[in-house]
Image 1 (cartoon, rainbow, N blue to C red):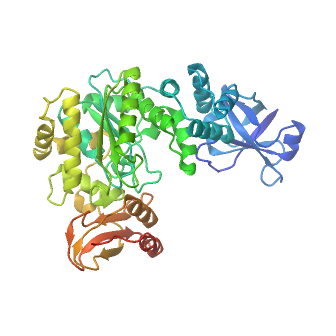
Image 2: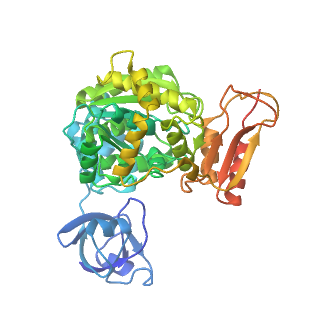
Image 3: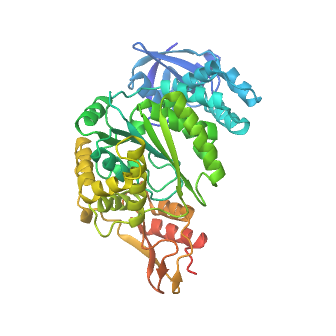
Length: 497
């Protein structure tokens, strides 16, 4: 059947949807959630069917397409598309096998990954795979096969450089904008660093959100290759390049379920590192309340698996554990975190010492690991690159190569509405929970409002006098500020002992 396109002006964020009038659906014996093959000018995609009960929504003879479906076909309103019924994907049987507790072969996992990438699975089927992998678990053979399949599911960046150095944190710590110090430090040392980073999902800012304060983070592949040749490194949003796209779709399912299956986490991280051609990878595993890894035993277990996967992919992996018991840095939220980074790169006295210390330690470890520094001298080299201004110069070149301009820190101002929590007595800060800071900063508007967030005036175990500031919350509106303050109080605030 051929139908004229109606642009619905609706986006799902990922799923490809087509809406047919109930008359057309009845004539074709179609039902909600059926898969349809759509064809236009040689392009083909698969979309999931919804049915309109009124002519007002979608009249007979029209096919209502959501933005994702329009994009996949390069279609516009009024185009004529051909629709047909798609066969049930082969991978559905393999998903059922996993649900029953079976082990999947490399071929079966490759088929599932391919079907995910090509949008052949419904949300129900994809969710079933994610949940089955979580509840039934995956052995190392399955994880390795899934990693390789994910890496092959999208583009692969090749730069012809050695070593290609990368760094990744498991996450869970508010602030922690170490990547934006480590990358220019490594570039200043002569390393090649193709860094792809994430946007915030549940945090007040991802590295990509903070980097975007300084420059664009969505760039074409050819531009990235030029930046690597000219500058030596970049920091971009991973979602802007087609690296391991199956992984992005799995993450979209995991997020609302608060699922972080170990096998899929390992495959997710390592597939993206393989996609950029990394040869040396430093994995940071923060430990502490609210982080993803609870103790050293679990960290050791993960480190072993990262090393095994790295060996299979030709990536040398070194894993370190760090203190994740409290936020790192002073600023929480894109603009405030960007200001921290620039202060640190310029050795400004206002720079947070914990952010600098952690970044120098991690950079030093990487410099020794990839052969740019002799054993025991990496941190000293990193510090020299920072204090000499070499790292700041490298960051300026990266920012300008990506189409931005390094701002003055005095121009990086937080939102105007503010509330300051002050110490109710003299003593020491007992704790500053990551979960509290994250929740409050997001309610204040971060990262959607880049100037919203929190400034930490102090950290755990630091002495404080009655009436001195502990944190200041910034928001664009009184409504958002009120919500953030109420949440701060609901979660118990920050105590002084």
